[in-house]
Image (cartoon, rainbow, N blue to C red; front, side, top):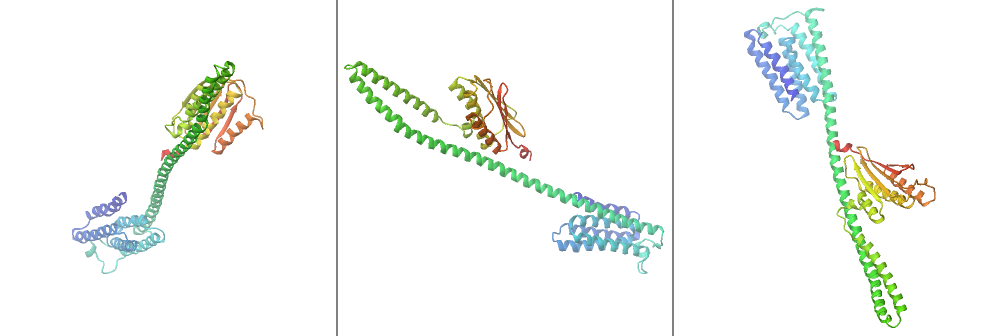
Length: 405
C-alpha cells in the first residue's frame, strides 16, 4: 500500500501543480497526456504476468520520456514514479535493463526538449524552447535530472532489498512457528506414549502379581490351613508338638502378610504416568517406611518435564536417599526442586554423618558413578558437596526459547 501512495503521488501531485501554470491553450493536451500515464500505471498494477509487466513498464518509460520532452524537467516526477515501481517489482538483469533504457530515453527527451525539432513548436506544447549550451542553466538541469534518477534508483534498490529480507525473515519466522507447533504436538504424543507404556507395564505387573497370589501366597495359605487342622488334632495328645506347629503357622502367616502387603502396595493405581516418578511421593514413601523426616519444596515456575528428565531426577533422588539412609544414618532428608529458564536443579541434602568420598569399586562409588552417567547422558551435570550437610546437586538443562515464538 505505501508503494501505491508514492507511485500515484509522484504522478498526480506534481502534474496538478504544473497544470496550474500552463497556458490555457495547452491544458487539454496536457490533461490527456497525464490521464494516459495514469492509465498505464493502473493497468500495470493489475497485471500478474512478468512479460506483460515488462511491456507495460517499457510503455510507461516511453510515455514519461515523451512528457519530459514536451513539458520539460518538471515531468521528471512522472519518470520517478515509473522507476520506483519497476525497481521494486522486477529483479535481476531485467531491473537494470529497464534502468538503462530509462536513462537513455530520459536523456534523449531532455535533448529534444532543449533542442526541439521544427515540428515541435510552442503552438503544440505552450512552452517556449530554450537553447542548450555548456555550463548553461539547461545543462545544470540535465545533470541534476540524471543524478536524481540515479539517486532514486539506488534508494529504490536498497528499499527493495530490505523488503525482500523482511519477507524472508517473516517466512523463516512462520517456519519456526510451524516447527514449534509440531514440536509441541510431538511432545504431547511422547507424553501420551509414556503413559501408554506405563499402563502396559502396570498391566503386566498386575498379571504377574495375580499369578504370584495364586501360586505362592495361595499355596502357602492352603498349607497353613492344613497345618492348623493338624495342630488342632495334635494339641490334645501332645501339647509341645502342637505348640511348635502353631508357631510354624504363625511364621507362615507373617510371611504371607508381608507378601500380601507388598503385593497390595504394587497394585495401587497411578492416576498419571508422571506420578510413577513423582519426587514428593518418593519422599512420602521413604518417610512412611523408615520414620525419617522428609522435606520437599519447589522453587520457580513449575513446568512439565520430558519423561527422560523425570526418570533421571527420580533415579538420582532414589540413589541419593538410599545412600543417606544406608551410609549416613540420616534422620532428616531435604529435597529441593528449582526451576529456572535454562535448567532444572535438584538439591538433596541430609543431616547424617559425612559420607566418605566415593571409592572406585565400592557400592557407594558405583552408585555415584551411575548418577553421574545418567545425568551426563542427557547433558546434565552432578555436584557433590561432602561437607555437612551432605548434598547431591543434579543440574539438567531445559530450553524455554521455543515458547517465545
